[in-house]
Image (cartoon, rainbow, N blue to C red):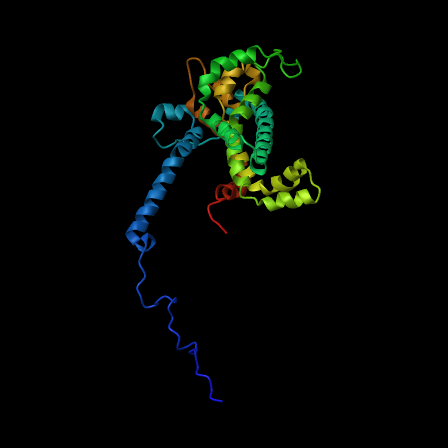
Length: 315
């Protein structure tokens, strides 16, 4: 028998069609241009300085005495630096009392917002019904409503809504911390539902089906299967919502009438007199007020950044 002709060439003789030519010059991007790279770094440095300038200026002013800035102005070298303004702001504004008032409002509102929003997002993404999309649009449209529009009717509604005396000394929702919690839950739930529903859509439905086959009910699927997988999104939302609720000033000013029930944002008013304002003292008080939000951000920083980058890459 005659040998069969060799049909396949050796690996060395095959043409490398898909292999890129190493001798071909590669196109240079913006990262290889030293001028463009230097301009980008300069822009980032200037942007960072412009963002930090108010904070650094407030810190510098808080470390100076009132007499120093009165003689030399705020744009001058300090004669001496001291922490007395922080001590005076802590005692004169009674900040520990107002910190407690803020936590009484912020923590329940934060827990309720995340819990109720995750339940709504679970129902919208795991079950199909006729008004599914309409309900999601309704929650999202709530964020487009300016809060100032409903100040007057909401104040009237709170005045006419009775509550037990153990929840409010006034007997109505007005001038009660419960009223602040409810208004924050109402306004913050729409954004959280929108974010959590988009995140839950990325979770495979096979997980819910497997849990259903194992006998898990709807609540168990939500609590033990879906909710633990949403931890990065919940951490990112917790950081944002804590900052927004903590920094609220409008609703506390409108719905709270008793000074002892005010949150921390209104405590800075105690540092201002009728005819005299020590801006150095106010700057120190402002930094003390902003401190808890910084602590929460640094504690949840890893989860917050992970939640922001979710969905940016595939695979």
